[in-house]
Image (cartoon, rainbow, N blue to C red; front, side, top):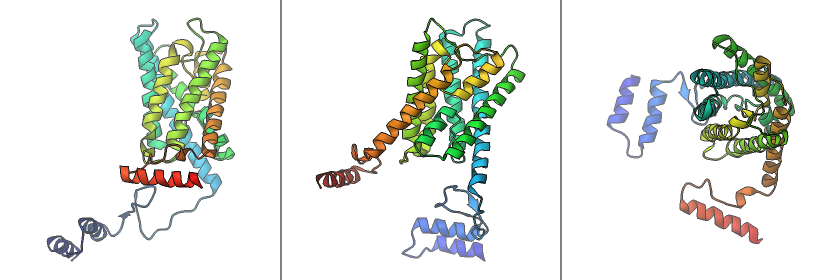
Length: 310
């Protein structure tokens, strides 16, 4: 009966029926038990009659932190694996330019993939310095931020342990000063690059726009870029969890404090900049960036200009 009704509706649609409404009718007739709700943030098939389960804020933080730890593990397992693979490919010698490119690609691509997979669950921060920035920007609560940092550290250590166990040869990947770079130079290099990386996250992922769903692409490219710059000099940290885990298994602790203080300071500066431009209503500086066409952009621009004249 349902199938006959469905065929009749397609064969002889009422004059006022659109193809989109027919599509929705098909979903309602063929799949009455489960329905895709386009207004749901999850965009998953769910029973129309089952209410959403309610969980406490603390339990949601615990689940999100657990996913954040898993994400950090997956991200750094692939990234550390790329570092060790580059060393193997170089035959034990210095990896050189090709090795630096391989390391940068491993970190950038790994972050892109894992963050894109998990950002709907935990945000896909995977970095204590970035977590501090999001707490300052009030994107997450201090309690969730503290739980995230702990989970990220545990996930990073587990990733390094897994690479140590699965890859032949000694573990490599600890951050250290190389090629005659001074402590001061390394500190400011790590601080500036972490600030750049964090700013990309804040503007692409925290600030919502029509392109937010592809934010992980820009974030992964940003991590790739900062690694291209810093790998020959510091190994590129911009992530205290990454530095801690690598130092534990490689046993390199020289100037280790740089890879905590500089990334956190860079992230804090980026978040302060973010708060500053939000206070100034930055959307009014270049209005209409999310407009679907020129007409909508011109309308938004006129509205902003009219408000400015008041």
